[in-house]
Amino acid sequence: MPAPTAHDIRLDVISMNEWRVCDRRVPQSDSRCVLGFIERRGFEYEVISVLQPGPVRTFGSLASATLSFSE
Image: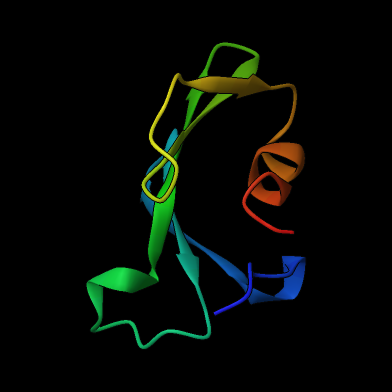
């Protein structure tokens, strides 16, 4: 499956500062829909990818953090 586009990304709220990043093209009941997680830390947003494990990446906005999961 090709990488998701910005339109394919869905954020599920976990808490006031945490979001689960999902691919809309995969059924919600399928664990493969989870692409990663975003957590707000002060004025930055930390991104953890499930598909490409590695260091935590930081972004200046929720929008740019979300777009980091798209092609």
